Length: 174
Ligand code: IMP
Ligand code: MG
Image (cartoon, rainbow, N blue to C red; front, side, top):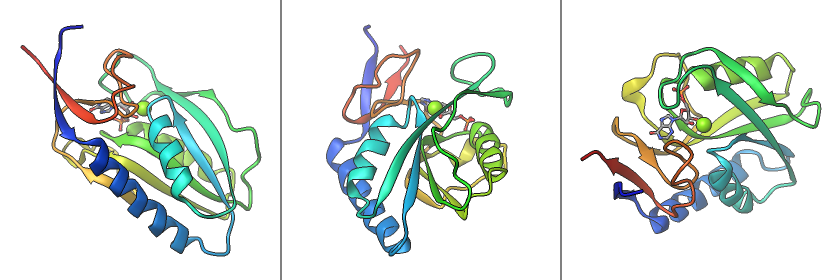
């Protein structure tokens, strides 16, 4: 593991932004209950921190989708590996994602969840890489818009490594 990683976003910057997102979401849903859906595995760190900052009655659910084919390029063929424990019909749902890249995974997931007739559904992404977008999808709340670089840390992996880094960084190719 000799990769060099340069810091793009520090833990303090991420914490501060998550607090702002939590406040914004708390205000938006005042008086309501929320079902928070964390997409595994990448969004797990973000979802835990964000959930702690959303001051509303809420439940946490986990889903796992996978694009067929290879690691860092999304193919658009998505399959559902882990589903929710509850019926979301009539509920207010917030999907929590680590990063929107091409948007293919999320666009599949959001369309799929809408068929379950939630009262409302929104999307929050910690990171957005708009330069690479293929599918027509936009987060309702975005932590940071970043350039087209492959990033790791804070849940994001490179071949399953680096998820545990407390910051977001770029793997420098030698
Ligand atoms: P999309 O379908 O292309 O939007 O892919 C989204 C998924 O690809 C994310 O949930 C990540 O798992 C992965 N991904 C996309 N860009 C990166 C990156 O820069 N670092 C790590 N994972 C990424
Ligand atoms: Mg992911």
